Image 1 (spheres, helix red, strand yellow):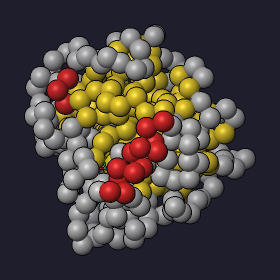
Image 2 (cartoon, helix red, strand yellow):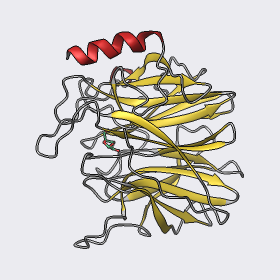
Image 3 (cartoon, rainbow, N blue to C red):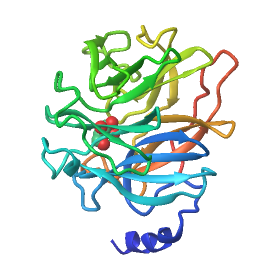
Image 4 (tube, rainbow, N blue to C red):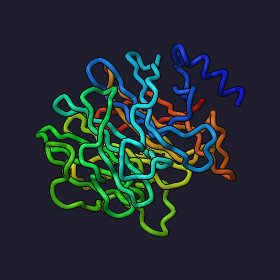
Length: 307
Ligand code: FUB
């Protein structure tokens, strides 16, 4: 506890460590980076200091303009922003996306509660619930939303554990359009021990006309795998691991961006929270590493977060 207080004081002025984990003042997980104008907005979930298992009430925001120094903006939204959920626990992996000058935050809550959406006029908030109910309440798999707005303007919401689901969003970004579909293309085959199939934490993006899906691969511990497709709706073809799983870790959760000519994968480790596989502490720490694409669009594999 003394150690955490000390780094909190250091981090109060500015987090200036190029070293992972990049957030050392709080326990953070499920990084959802968004590049807007000249700045990286890093939204995260937040493990309480005394967390055993998952104990998460709110979502945090950090910003950077150099990927080294991160400014802490504190809590940007919380379960209390949704009138229809338990405010005490379940603020899992969010993602924020901008459309037409508004910022949409997709917020999952486990335990059959569904995925909510908040809207703000600024990436710093305040975020408000425009619909007063879950945007998606589908299967009990309803966690870990990620959103892609394709070049033709069609938006897609993807989510799920242990299945990958997707649905089209209307242009308002707060209503769905058509049926919810379960994607079978990279699903784990029951009983198969392979370590690379989809488990959770999807992150979808488009680059040079190719669609990418990164995800936390078969649990547990989880690595980060990725698949590619010619279409936003798959089928997805597994292409490799961005990072293998590691016994020092339990979960993982990718967030991928291009920024100032470089590409990055965010995820998390347990290096400050001291996870052990025998005791389930979820006290996680967001980390980031540069990634390199090959000429054919595939991604070079990285070692697990080293610090
Ligand atoms: O943070 C809670 C859950 O753990 C997330 O929803 C999963 O992706 C895993 O990171």
